[in-house]
Amino acid sequence: MSSRNPNSHEYHLVEPSPWPLLASIGALILCIGAVIYFRTDDLWLMLIGLAIVIYVTYMWFRDIIIEGEHQGHHTPVVQIGLRYGMTLFIASEVMFFVAWFWAYFNASLFPTEQIGSVWPPAEIHLMDPWHIPLINTLILLLSGTTVTWAHHALTEGNRKELIQGLWCTVALGIIFTGFQVYEYMHADFAFSGHIYGATFYMATGFHGFHVLMGTVMLIVCLGRSIAGHFKADHHFGFEAAAWYWHFVDVVWLFLFAAIYVWGYY
Image (cartoon, rainbow, N blue to C red; front, side, top):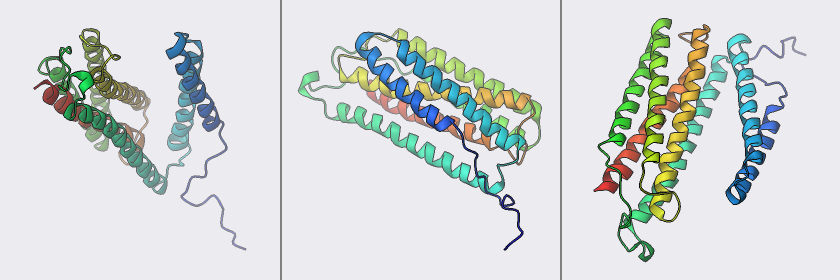
């Protein structure tokens, strides 16, 4: 029999955790609560589910940070698996947005008689793409630059510029979300009643949600950077957030070109 320590390998065998089960329960309650809210305007069950999901997300990622930053479980081999996982996650997100682009182009290229066989429908007053949408495009492009600056600073061991770059990126993400909310508040069409509003709000709304989630991820990275986490050769948590942020940047460019510009003309 070999005398080798069974824990001397480079793979991380995770300890039993309650978070997957609790996350599933929270997501189920959230979905049921959302259906009830849509039918009755009663929010309480949906808020309970949302609270459970937020709590589980915090605790689960707290455990992952402890495993990687303090317990040393994120070995080079484990990091390869994490990179594959994040790559597949972003690929699934790409297909998620492909569905909304498909719905938009299906409705716009082949308008039905119900909307007068024209696109956009005659009663829709479109948003000028060269006002707030263009500003938001420039904001996201700039934020992609600042997060790359932060990443470069991290690889060079410059923590001060890492923190500065993250502050700038978080601020730009919040400004983008503010402009998006302002745009929605002043839109001349609603979500319901016609296919244009449904496809527009689903595509841009889900993108806005992804920007919000990316901003939260970067805020966590900012807090960890201030606390002294991340090293030049060990920072996949930050790298994954940066990948995700670049992904939402690229999706917005397609949204801007297809829905705002092409749809306007």
